[in-house]
Image (cartoon, rainbow, N blue to C red; front, side):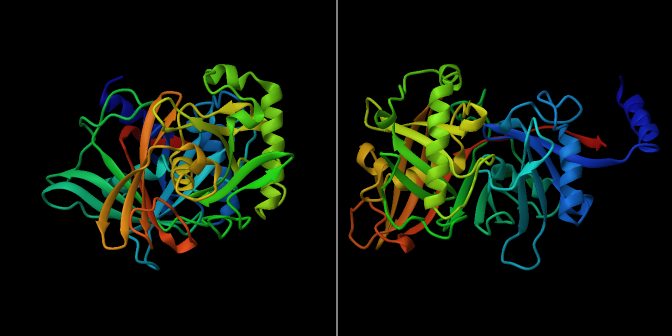
Length: 388
């Protein structure tokens, strides 16, 4: 079909079908459509119903929509101006369930999808592109958690760049580096970095660390539940007994964290950790044990939480991580890099800490955490209108 005939068909169809403009991005290791708030109903109920229809949820293949049949490809971002805060734009993340025609409101932010918000905002004219070359800062306020993000968007000659040499394990090919900084993300959902007030708790006889940085998460040593970290994703997904056990631990820990009954929801997340051969933290992060799904890599919100936990004295990740690297940013401020190994390779996260004692790699009080960060790539895939 040539371009003119394609436009002709769309015009004819638009006469009898309702539609919503979208731009689909691969953002980090996730994928989904980006929409403008102004193109959607203002009321939450009708808005979310429309999003569910666009994604084709209620069918495991999402055959009638833009979804890809798994959680990492069933995501939507809404973006618009933010005249009521210091941010350039506001965004809302929607984790659209696959088999059920609904949205999981417990998810919070998505660290992978947030990376493309800055590019989308510039492409849509919400933020003017800077002149010259470099990373253009775009500040984004989350409607989900209230957290403020600063996205470094690669720009050249007032145009967003997508092609480059930066590689991320778990993403095919390379692209232009996009930098993400999350400003004071502690307590994003529960209101505290340590929701239980302790670095370690006991649930069903298992030691767990409950931490809320960018997202609430339950972390435990693989050895405590007999989980073999050398197993493949497919092997872990098929281990129904382990999934049931992890789900029970997650639900019990959620009660300790003050999150109530989280049955059927994906938050808090759960992550099983160990020490790699070179001393890095080794992690297996679960999208949702009750769905029998292990994440193929590492969610960026989860990575920020785990990296921060590696610096909290007494926590399980702090006991297991041997290789945090320090960069002094100035008096009383240190940037720590924590490398996390996952199924597809590894990724580094930065944690900026206001240290009371120089050289101490610790988050020893709530306000010590200043920001977290990481680098990734984004790629627009297609754009047009979604009929519904």
